[in-house]
Image 1 (cartoon, rainbow, N blue to C red):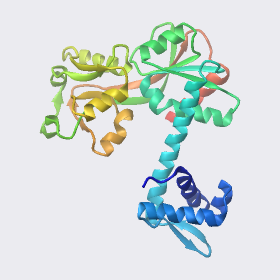
Image 2: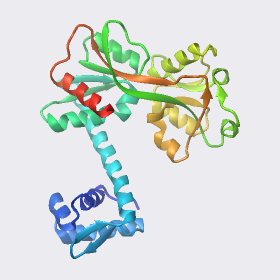
Image 3: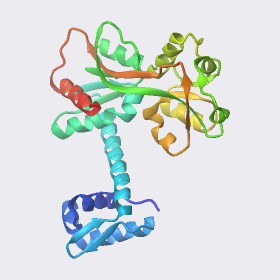
Image 4: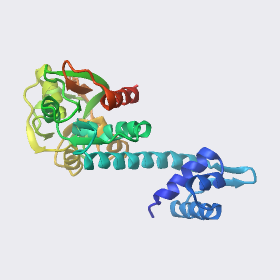
Length: 298
């Protein structure tokens, strides 16, 4: 059975505080209720998670592993809630932000959440679209700050690198490319119809530019979708190969739903950037959000 979120929060707090009683107090519940909830969680998972002693409570080795996973689940949930709030409040927001799909799905909610923790009075509205339209929205004054993944931006915009990213050629585990003894070449990739994003997408623009630089020929499209999630799902279902950000397929690669195929002679690295109108200095919450993004990227 799937663990409930409050039990996961309780487990994380036990690990941090070393006491079921202190963890219960932090959540505002009675210690017997907390003990019962942890016991239920252990039964559901079939694992002993907490050692209970007179001196306090400590996580078992299995408990430490599960707690790390629980913390990731809770972080993703916080990102979901923060991102949904930004989408819902974008019209009356104090800070209007547009982000390309990869950034919006995997990075921006965390940045917005961090900004809101230090500035709870700031309401952020988020528009999610492709990189080309993000630039148009910034140029048109419809948003204050944009985040893009395309290799080029209009000269009318100032740009600041915020993170590095890499695209990966991915296929399902039974695809013939998985059994190849030699890496693909750039020409092999160009000659193969791919599941791709729509024109204007930063991911597609990065791939097309890499193929041009490798003199491998133009991109061939097998199917075209308007979101990274749709492309990823099509590949998992066996529609064909695709080239996607490692941010978007990290869990699929780790859990074996997709396999990365090596390609020689093709540079698929790219920069993720913040953009705003040239000649204008970012101030206030826009500057603060940019700082948060820069700190997160190290």
